[in-house]
Length: 125
Image 1 (cartoon, rainbow, N blue to C red):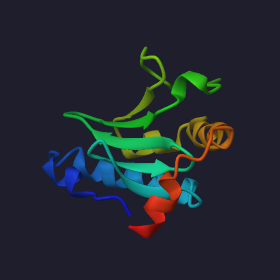
Image 2 (tube, one colour):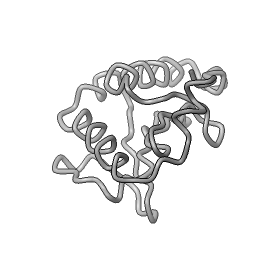
Image 3 (cartoon, helix red, strand yellow):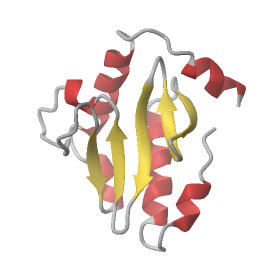
């Protein structure tokens, strides 16, 4: 399991959102390994797929290969080479149409990548 101590640094409004986002992802993608990557609780397969990053007023669910994913609901934000994120400002944002499909798309895309050994490392933690 990833180290969730990063969440304890968040303010009282954002901390529960970070935990809820992480728990929601665990339910959505139980087949993924969990570990800390770049200081953030993350979900891994062949690569790092998704991280949960608390911000001052919201939580970002970061899709590390988000630029490669179909996003018919236009949930993804960002303009980096690969990374995209979805902002979670309230608990109900986790129920928005298309978020679960993005997680599934990330998993499918990850299966096309070479195994970087992350899943094996995560399972040993």
